[in-house]
Image (cartoon, rainbow, N blue to C red; front, side, top):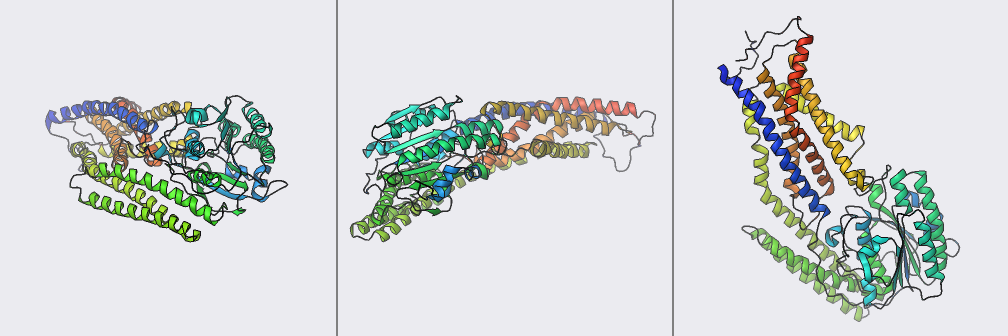
Length: 619
């Protein structure tokens, strides 16, 4: 006789066949879902790595109206240098506090965008705009940078440029650079060759460039190999620091300006690309002519390009979303005001095109009332900001540069708010359009659970699914020490290995739990094979459903086709990690059924002859 608390199976043989069908149908459905998720994962991954910006507007450059505040700008980029390591370097500290021929400079940090990789940062620094706008999201981006930049600004303004760096800079800027000295950054002697060539440019007798970039790569290379906080990375940084000291001595900082920067940092294990403070917070030091000594709050990496243009009296990059660091540099009141008016005019043209693109997209929303009103309000605010820029120029002409500066800053801030509000509006509207599909996707899988919950082993399946998530997350966060961050990929060729390892791990965990669940079912208990098989399939179903709910949440928040924006990459990485679980656990669901039956048989055999609980009628 069954116990009073036992769950009653379906009557007669129909119950047995129902469990057999469930045990067969669930793995088939989950396997099909896995294949679909695999395609979905690649689509979402490619939407980021092959992201093509919609903001590559053909903008008319705004001529510069101010005079240069310096005889030239030398930008030295130490690839991968962390802020803490920069504090241990003599030349960097000399540029901060002053020493010998180096006057005291400005000490601050610059915050990178996402993803925090080398090529995207090499696009941000000279363009003054973000990854979402310039479109470079990986280190394997192909083609020239498609937004305006400092090199083009220099050409328009009659200034000369030179770059001493690796192939990546040639790939991004090509003929925009007047003098390009290219070296193979994979060679061990790369930094020394860069230093010798840069020193020759500075001391060789030819006219000095007005703007020069020198790129050192050894710290990045050693940080990947040994770790971001390793003695090896610091030792390489000190060698490069000695090179920098000689370059600064040759640059004549009484007449010219030097900027020391890094494109990104590294986590302790060597990776970067993610959101960690030590990765996205980079050292930034400015010294020499027109620099105000002192320590300053953090800036954006996008601020470097417009600040360089202001120092050199050049037109602003047309796509820049950065600001001139007026608290850090000293151009004189009138030239500073003119620099902000120039930046404001360029920002107005860019924001006007941005608004036009949003108009076209948002007015397609059914009903259109809310978006139409918001777009009209944004257009009014943009017109008002344009009026403020005109007022600022009037103040300049009238000899009131302080008021001109204040007015231009207000206008630029208002335009930045217009773009930010439009972006959030469109994301919100698209989320609204995904809400019903997301709810359906989340709720429909509950329907089979009404039937599956009649299974005697349903509670065991729920417990096994819970143990799956506990086990997998413990492995991910505790055992491996991972985060939802691109920084866990210390090298790009490790991405596929990471994907494969996580898939194998997920499959192994769910299969082992199937074996354990079967053993628990067979331990000193009578069981029906078809019902237990359906219970094991239910375990896989619940695991897939739990993972699916998290993926559905990402779909609701960010969608899967990032044609006009880059999603939050913490959420994005989690989505990829979820998909990497769903694929193998779905494919392994048939194995889970088999291992559960094997586990039950083994447990029953081992406990044969011992007291058992009353048998349950298998129907």
